[in-house]
Image (cartoon, rainbow, N blue to C red; front, side, top):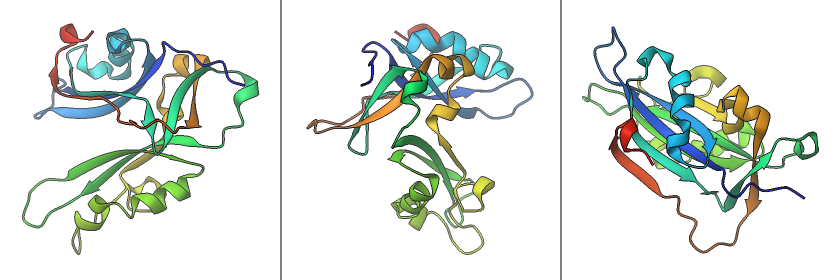
Length: 192
């Protein structure tokens, strides 16, 4: 049986910044575990040091449910290493004819293996429609499949967080499995 930590939550964050020497705003994705989003500010500063603390959030979400599973944050112990499902983060990239940019769509998915997730991702509407001959939609090239980036979320947590916590997925029958998403420009001072 797992010892669930009720106050600790997984936050999925899109950070925006224009680091010195860059021409346009850049973005990166951050995952952290805390009671409140503001508690993660020091960790986010460490995560992207090139911003020198000058960044904002363009979106953040407390991840509670994915694919019919509820996320639970538990203390990391050797007794809970046998996990049947993992939480994966996928960043898809794709193109539209005549449009001078790469579009992205991100997903969180629950699954046993990366190969299972890749099969599911290739069935998404984005993957099927954001590409054309010579500019196919992709799941970036790290795995020789057309996916921009794909990771187990556990692997994206800071070392300090990974040493303390683990994400467990528990099948859920909850009727409302919506994750509350906050989208817009959020200065660090505005975070609660």
